[in-house]
Image (tube, rainbow, N blue to C red):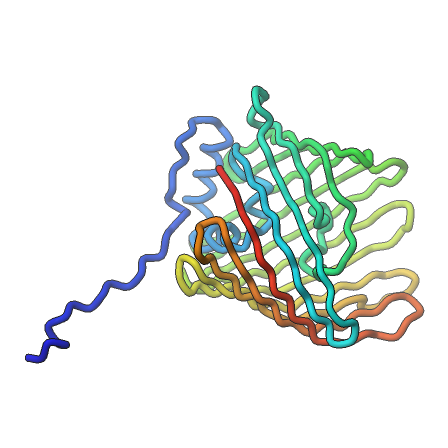
Length: 299
């Protein structure tokens, strides 16, 4: 028998399963988070945590998340663009852990954020969020910011089966004289711990413009290792005024990797985008974005 044959085969790298982690806190919010993990997630929680999706942060346990990331993009017809982003959710010292300070430079409240590119100019969101209720399948929070704007968000999660989950999110808000609402529906199916498919539909309405915005996306997540994953996506967005038309369509993928330090990430996003503004020609172009991210969290 050769020396090569005597060498043991290294074990496959285990998939870290966040669904069965238990928090060290006994607070109701932490218990609800653990319940949702064990009952509904399987790979979904891992992918949302790794890609830092707002779904995981909206119902996060008490703790701190600070993300600073820089997008370097090349647009086929518009050239190079750069954008720096800073998002933070912080517990306030000496205050109820349900209350969080929010700073967001990327338009967290936009239900169509899955269609937004790195060059979109979103107003910074600075305010407070109170996680009023989180138990079992239901969560509810209220947020106020400096615009001023007051928003209430209700979310209901229902497991159809061990592999398929639905999630309904309803928001209503008042911003100065504008009253608006948005509805989001997610249906996700885990084929196994390697692949997760998610379909998202969103609708939004504001009374000042009397315009409905509608969008949908399809995402396939692929697990590679505990430090690598890919997200493939296709999305479309449209409005019903001044006439019915598709404002934006996009296909692409994102490769994301953790490297060097547990708080350091990079990702590469090649995509093709079809966009149209009112009274302008449709702009079709390839885009590639390189992102460096520093992430600090304690949740």
